[in-house]
Image 1 (tube, rainbow, N blue to C red):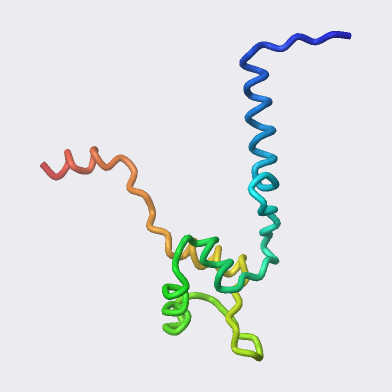
Image 2: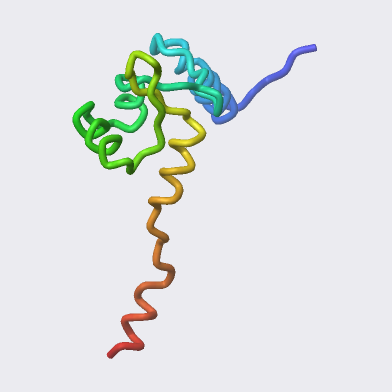
Length: 103
């Protein structure tokens, strides 16, 4: 049995394969589930921030964290995700319509 695919179908399949392989090709296997524990460098990569920013937030008790017996900071991914969600600013729907009302 022979199956012929359209070029668009082949492109879609190729894009999906690349998407699935990206974590393995980059050298970083995406195993970051809710059970993942981050140290400071890992959290920096995850949030795209500096270690200084993280240390400031932990000092001010703004970011969920815990300390090991050797005083090293650790962060649960699920706690960080929940914290990020609580910091979210809701989008304004139909902004133009509200401006017209103000005129």
